[in-house]
Amino acid sequence: MIKIRNVAFAYGDHQVLDGINLAVKPGELVGLLGPNGSGKSTLLQCCNRLCSPDEGTIMLDGDRVAGLPADERARRIGYVPQSESGAFPASVFETILLGRRPHGGWSPSPEDREAVSQIIDRLGLEDVATRNVSELSGGQQQKVRLGRALVGDPAVLLLDEPTSALDLKHRLDVMSLVVECVRTDEMAGVIAIHDLNLAARYCDRVALLSEGQLQAVGTPDVLTARTVRAVYGVEATIYEHDERRLVVPETPIDTESAD
Image 1 (cartoon, rainbow, N blue to C red):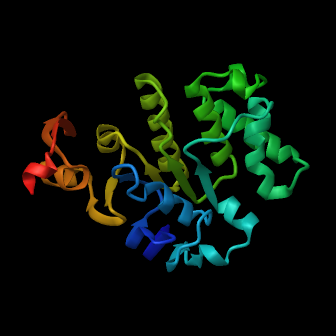
Image 2: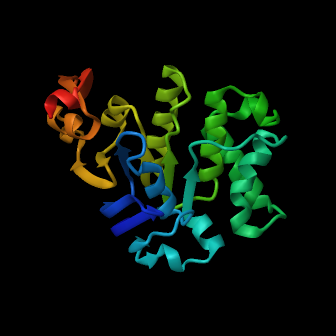
């Protein structure tokens, strides 16, 4: 379990997170929702110590994340960033193998190689295992990044908008894989995501961020016309279909008229 308690973070005078409280259980996927600049990516980076909170604590199974050695933190937390600056010339197998480095250094063991083979099979990447990652489609590349995060058998999986650059089929494919892995491996999953309907379909709970604060946390039922209006400044109609919540945005709110 990962517990976020009273976390605050600022870039200079700009307060990005302010008093965030959230707990995610093993086997649960929580979606972080909110407009650009609301603090979703920063919160994930605080959980992974890429950013150090100004206030508050983040606990992983009772241990303070801030107190964990870097290698242990890397073993226990899998992270898929929003983007990566360029792809170095490495195969799918070699790239996923990097996720095993915190377990034993730069010389992979037979156990490391077997773990990579199992992840490649699990993600359906057998046919491209020896290909250069830069030659793959966007959907395949995202699976490779997911595999690199999963191969270390983490307790927590953090994903920063993993579907943002994918077409509809690959969005569904990646989200299905994420849910399967979180459930099967009993990981605590946190995903920053823009698509409200994907979040409603795949996440157990959602947490809506606005101006650095949590505005609502709960099952996808908290996605109401009122909360969408408050968080996104957009009028929306909410439908129920096949026991799923569908959010249909209508028009942006004219804030000048509202004033």
